[in-house]
Figure (cartoon, rainbow, N blue to C red):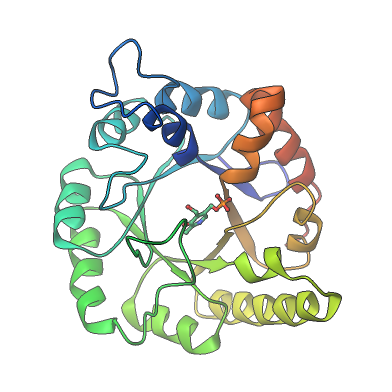
Length: 253
Ligand code: PXP
């Protein structure tokens, strides 16, 4: 489902599971395991989200295997499984068949995904994973830094989508850094679109910096988690999602 003006919102629901796992729920469906990310996913979809994203991490710190199975059964828009390129997780994805997989770098000690996946350095091991996922009928996205070398690397891998890492833009603390980062994002988006890749963006996008995201051309989808979950604590998911869709409105592409 595309929003009227063409920019789709994918809601990352990891931190709903983070809250549940604060009580170490070993059985995500048991009655005291709350809040349930699958229920929240449905609320987000009803509020207009065009997709649901969840990251199954090797350490299972938030989303659990069973959550992904239930999301697969319940998500009616599009399920995007974020994951590292490890044999265990790739086998899992092939069993579940999400609509899309977004390959990210993953370090056990990180708080959240830091930096894009280096698709140039890791080309060899990514190649076989992309082929396996495609054979299973799964669209493949790679989360990359906005660098032309990485866009060329994504093209060489024959992936379907690049998700541009907007974390540096989100964390820019001077106008100069912000402008530099925007310029890199714009160039990367233009190059990716020129190669026939779908262009998504994500990481650190919130209700303030979304105005800057409008300046990046060719975007199809934004994947946003933390800021939506944080606002939902105050106003509920329905309003938090509607507010973000409102802020995305008017994107000219
Ligand atoms: N896209 C990717 C590839 C990510 O790893 C994350 C964080 O899990 C997001 C988007 C969402 O980032 P945030 O939670 O900062 O909105």
